[in-house]
Image (cartoon, one colour):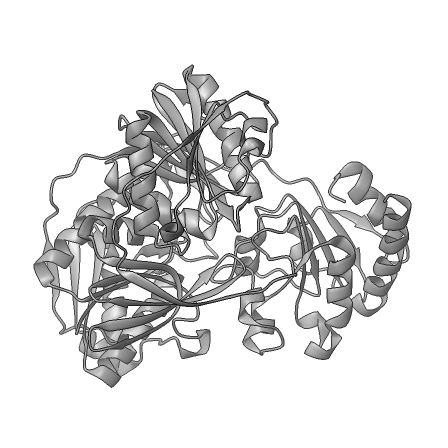
Length: 248
Length: 320
């Protein structure tokens, strides 16, 4: 089984979010980039397919050379090789188009991605990729087993869970549950040393006109101070929620 | 030309997000000077859509569409969009909507903006504001294609009544074959889900142990709220994983979020800060959550929550 794991290179959750050039560009100054947290679940699940079922695991990112440390980290966690599509990722549709080419050229049976990235939170790439490739697809996946060419998928639905069965090839938008938080791998020294020698192939993008463009960014209006209520006076809280906030 | 909304229903009834998407669709149709068409699948009663501005309703009734394969539903939406010559297609942010919308965009070769929080600031060029960086910022996105797909964030535009006397038309699209088989569905019934709740009551490690959740459940019941918890609590198995809210857990965008004994780690805030009003109850006045909250009480949950329950009960009795 050939598994492809899509890795987004995103600002760490604790990063300060600022913009430059008249609020049109994200300010990467001083920002620490990490593997998208949702993709980490997908990557660890892929490692289990490798270790228990002999799958090969390739990681891919669509981005410029600055994303390579993030791909190296995925290699250090245990992926066999990496692909970087050498272009600026402009929007979800563009990224999905590039990934579809990688999947077609590599003949992958299973594509694992996080259900969304924590930078743009678009949640669009996995479903778009499945749609372009005409593969089966499950979003919000919280459990995945594969036997032969049949997948058993557990996914979250509004108010519950659904179990599905589907044949490969398959695209998954994953989240916690695919593996648990405690199972997530972090690179060890040996992994980091080995990652240096693993192949990281740079491929050129295919042409695709952008369907959207970013006009500008803005930050939410600064929040007013928290109104403190005395612990002995919960009546006041109820009154504020009823009369002022009008939420009860 | 038209604006098309896909109004999702569950057990034949419309969800609030479907009516919100309809309200939003009406606004966009007005901006574009065109009509609002609403597509429904297996809904019992469609007149509610007229209340929120639907000028034409396409009603699909087909048992084959009862189990949701996003690919199949997306194809139905595509057919409706082509039939109505839609220039904008609007889809809500329910779990199903989030899966279907990107597929619709691909099949219509349309630019797609998700998590949109407001009506277009301009229709030519077509610019919408959407959430970015886990609610720490917004991005104004221009959609450049002829057909545009908009994913509307939950609880962002609100419900706006706008009565119109629309017609309902039976629509029989061709149904493509699904590659997925649903083998079981396990849905909790009778409790409010985090996704649908207007109020969420959430508790953290400050509760000291799973045996103390009785008062949290009681508070939620009094408020008609869903219960939720912080990540450490679900990691320790005090509460089910389905209740974990925050980054990597469930997102919350309720009207009211009450956090009890939760310090407010940045990962937690990333998942809940699109809730409108936040109340924090914590013993530690330095807890970071107070900086993100609208109302706060410094105090012991074991004293404050029972008092709050008692006072809310009499408040509810007087305001029933």
